[in-house]
Length: 223
Image (tube, rainbow, N blue to C red):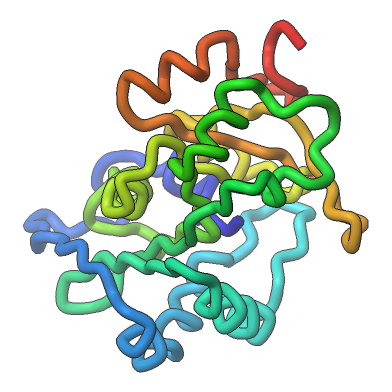
């Protein structure tokens, strides 16, 4: 999962922002349109990934991002939403999670019951990336993109995986309402990820009862 993290939280009103804001449009792209914007998306990744001072996390290269985008685009149901004015301001992309439970392979412990039920029902959508150009005109742009991506697919629950070393992204997602439910490690990877969920609607929120974001990075409360 990628996200323009610490900077959006730390900005003050007026920092690098014009006094007259142009309206930001959100638009969903098909695979053909995404391919046509590939270079712009790679540039956006490069700008949004600038490492903050003191952040030791080493972020993937632009080429690695381009390769990963190609792989994600092959997934059934892949979707990408862009935010734009006269230029590209941000994007969010992801894909539906299969109901067979394979997404949770490598989860440490037991997947929370409500999360498992929503996965089986086909109501879960994976957010694979959120990228925002530094100093966007719309301070709530990341949240708007995130919710548009999920609601377009009538998802009840968003899920994402974040490298445990990527503390700025974890902090940003938690501030946007994502809940940290535990850790996961894929059999083919040495990386340990935090698994986070984002409920949409009263039904999904009720099923997440008892889960809570843990600032220190542990699992959900009560487990």
